[in-house]
Length: 251
View 1 (cartoon, helix red, strand yellow):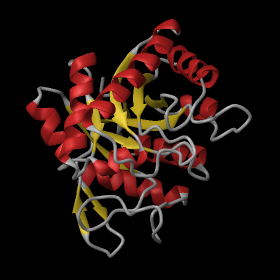
View 2 (tube, rainbow, N blue to C red):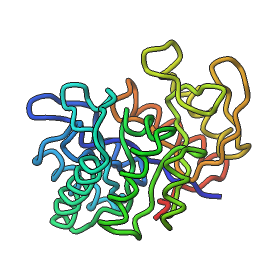
View 3 (cartoon, helix red, strand yellow):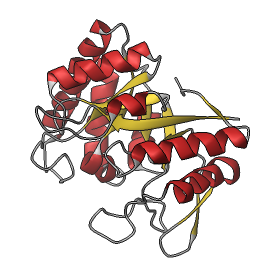
View 4 (cartoon, rainbow, N blue to C red):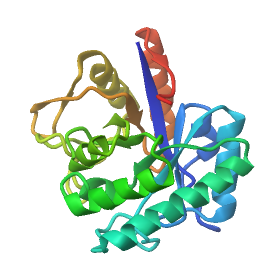
């Protein structure tokens, strides 16, 4: 049995440092690298791509709303045409930096509010899918199982990769607890590691109300900006290894 371990990286901006990308790149198998719209400046993104390439970590384009001030965590009521163009722009920019680093963008993962919006917002989901198909229809997409984003991606012939979250709370519906609500973010390394092992081996995770939610992830995310992200990722790796679960990228 094998599982991909991914993290959102490249989110520092200028003098503002966020997370420990260097440490995380030694632990994960895939890096969802910011594309400059929600976070990340060109020098940071290039350094992150180089670090990923040096460690054979797969690079994904983490596309989001053009919202630096809100870190891409605020809904943007954007037209489909504009959203498609902006997603193409982001993938292309990061792909250029990745190729200059000896690698390339290997998949796409929406970020933050865009990720959560296209669980239900079909028009925005279609716009994101249209962008990926226009740029490179062989790119897989990472997202939430059961989302309209996955439905639209599958209809367009894109490969969908089911994702679960190590450090985020779940609602009984299988969606993520909004960050404005209690239980949205988990930070205890041992608790998080045990939770991930249960997801991988048993296909289940407890929601905030105690409901058991079914999940069969191909990839598990640890947010790079979560407190103790490095310690959590080390604990996850150690527990998975002890259980005989290998870590490997899905692409």
